[in-house]
Image 1: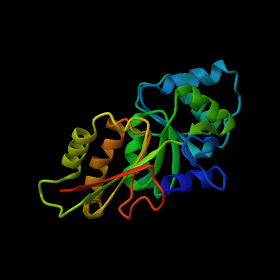
Image 2 (image 1 turned 135 degrees about the vertical axis):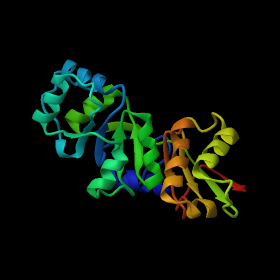
Image 3 (image 1 turned 180 degrees about the vertical axis):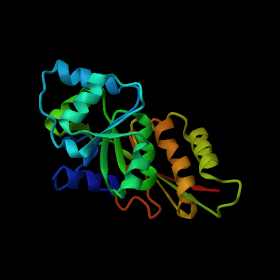
Amino acid sequence: MNIIEKRIAEVANLPSVSPGDKIELTPDWKLISGKSSHSVFKAYWNQGYEKVTNPAKTFFSVTGTEEETTLKFCKEKGIKLIDCEPEDYFRKEGFKQNGTVLAGIDQQIKCMGGNGAIAIVISPAAMADCLATSSFSLVIPDTMYIEINGPLSKQYTGETLCSYLLDSFNDSLIGNAVILGGVVIDQLNIQDRKNLSYFFQLSGAAVGLISAEGPLGQVESAIKIKL
């Protein structure tokens, strides 16, 4: 198992997981944000659910366009309302991101992999079920490790590295877990890691993680890039 699989197995209370395994996973946090937020609550109500399991570990990102019924529901159920990006909220509140398993409905949360979080995007319907039951079904994906080595020159920022990787891999990573590591990754500052982590979202990866020390275990494929 690699660093992603080990943490997922730990959270799922399983001795191990392998690609292709279908498991029930209870995430550390549930994040409701983005344009499909209303669909979550609509599915929840349509299913006739009444209870939100562990609402203290659930938060809803407020944009100012929400219906009053949605805000009232969150307040009544104890769901945290936030008015900033999830990763900014975690940082402000001092919540751990490294190794934290998150479930969300917005593709942008994959960027939290730049801070070591394992952010998994699920459908609004699955999130509605997760609100009520605390867990969701996950099929463990194959993992690719991409190691980037060489000196970090001024021409390579998190943004330029993201573009370089997107041009290199095109759509070949869709549905895979992706771990980025190597000497270059270790030299990036926080902002560059954040900019680079957009690669996970834009490449179609199922989940992505920046791990300068490598995958720390078995992966299905690996590639080394020297800048």
